[in-house]
Image 1 (cartoon, rainbow, N blue to C red):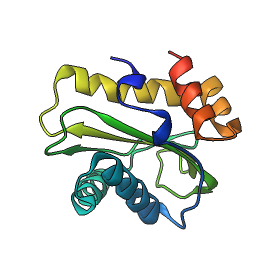
Image 2 (image 1 turned 90 degrees about the vertical axis):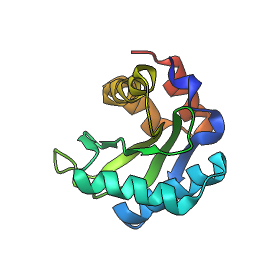
Image 3 (image 1 turned 120 degrees about the vertical axis):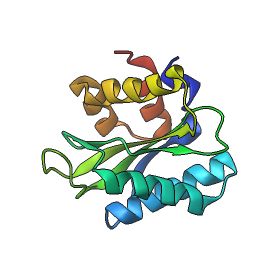
Image 4 (image 1 turned 90 degrees about the horizontal axis):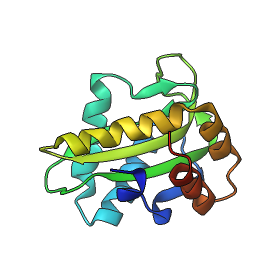
Length: 150
């Protein structure tokens, strides 16, 4: 499995505005629901529910919110770079500006769980994170994540 298996150029956003963590997660969940033609409330609740268990802010300005969604048959990814960093209760206490929302089927297979590892490895790479912060648009951010395999 590769990131391109669950992440398309239409799923990359550069310059997203969000006032806080909750609104950011709601906005990303709503966008994912539109792309997947699923109920947005169900996705919002799953993402916020997972976040309530512990922050998905992994440090260095990166967050990887994720949730299991009933009715989803394969992983789905949505990347966003915020216009301004947002407080996210990250493990290092730093705000985040690089966010990858990952939705997984309710009954994930080993391959599905591998998707989370792929995303985490890519976003923790300083070179890739730097390129994502310099990306002019979603297409360039998508190319960066697809081209840089770690």
